[in-house]
Amino acid sequence: MDHEELNKWSKRAADWALDYHAGLRERRVRPDLAPGEFLKRIQAPVPEEPEPVEAIFEDFTRLVPEAMTHWQHPRFFAYFPANAAPVSMLAEQLANAMAGQAMLWQTAPAASEMEALVVGWLRDALGLPEGFTGTIHDSATTATFSAVLTMRERALGFAGLGEGLSGAPRLRLYASAQNHSSVDKAARLSGIGQDNLVKIPTRPGDRLHSMDPGALDAAIRADLAAGMRPAGVILVTGGTGIGACDDLAACIEVAKSHGLPVHVDAAWAGSAMICEEFRALWAGVEGADSIVFNPHKWLGAQFDCSVQFLRDPAPQIATMGLRPDYLQTQGTGEVVNYNEWTLPLGRRFRALKLWFLLRAEGLSGLRARIRNHVAWAREACEAIRALPGFTIASEPILSLFTFRLGDEAATRRLLERVNRDGRIYLTQTRHQGAFVIRVQVGQFDCRREDVMAIAEVLSELSGDLS
Ligand SMILES: Cc1ncc(COP(=O)(O)O)c(C=O)c1O
Image (cartoon, rainbow, N blue to C red):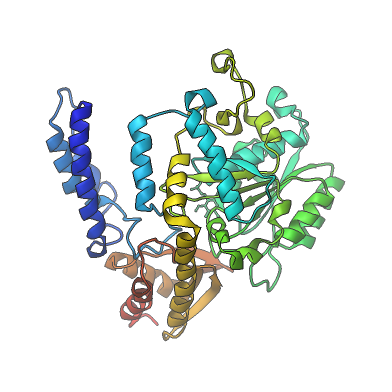
């Protein structure tokens, strides 16, 4: 294919995309497909000779969408959303057209400088203090891993990078029992180890399920007394299971009293902080050293796009950055080379979709969507509470709540039925030992009636289970 043909096929793809999105409501949210079934349909030997694009395109339209879970479906209430505002898709097309690589300032000056601009816009939009700078990663997992590696090196006086960890003191990390598994992964892969990630219990009866700051302090003191070396605290705003929000002000005060750095995981809930009325959920966040949130979840930037704010980037650059000869930049003075802030060398031009999104939607447009989602989730929660046999297991935090129907067996059967039915898509978690079904509202195209359909579907499918 040459660029003339690409132009022709891009128009076909755009037409196809228009029909796909217009027809999403008529599709099941998740395909009714057994593992391996799709592979059987496309199985073929590696092509030796070129095939006409027409045939490949035809196979795509016939086979692939039917075997996809539709994240942009307005009745997708599972996991967290991965919104893709059309304007951010447009920006991705333009970034793809240039196919640049933003590892150094000089390999993509516009990408690097736009990254600084949009990170600053988002910092202001979320109400964070001016001093924070930051970078754009692929995912919150990478951002949290970078933050934990930095904690490790700060605790070791930056000796671990050279000497390794074999003779190092035993490092300790602290996080709420409500943290996402990306924190466990960071503890494991940083060499600190899962056993040295101390899970602090939540405060009994706390509406937001915050970790207990007193228990955090006690755990740090006990570790110090045992000769171990605390390295950092990871807090959460909007945990994945039930939306838990740590009491940031109190926990950061404890961390700082021990001289420990703090990373806040607000991968999902961070987007809601563009609305001033939700900022109480992360009161005290300005005391953190590092904060991650994913505009690719609730803000509408097409996946992937995760922003990490840093109070001072120097320790992370000292941990992650390397400048071999072939990456030296001649005659450019002091420029920011964002690969030194993160794990991969090669980087996509992710700032472009944020620049398009924030300009085209405006914060006012994005706030209106998030406020609707929160209000509709509360309505849906009340409608489910009113259904016979249903119990709300965790009350809404922003637009996330959980419920169950009778015992574990009935709740599991209901979830299976709902997802086999296909009109809506829900997933599960465990809360206080019980198997519960999660509902999160956040898909950009959903309307109030889509959200209210949740209770209708549940009522219809639960008749003989309660
Ligand atoms: C609270 C929280 N943190 C981290 C993550 C990991 O995000 P990512 O997929 O960007 O690595 C998730 C994913 O849903 C999450 O909910």
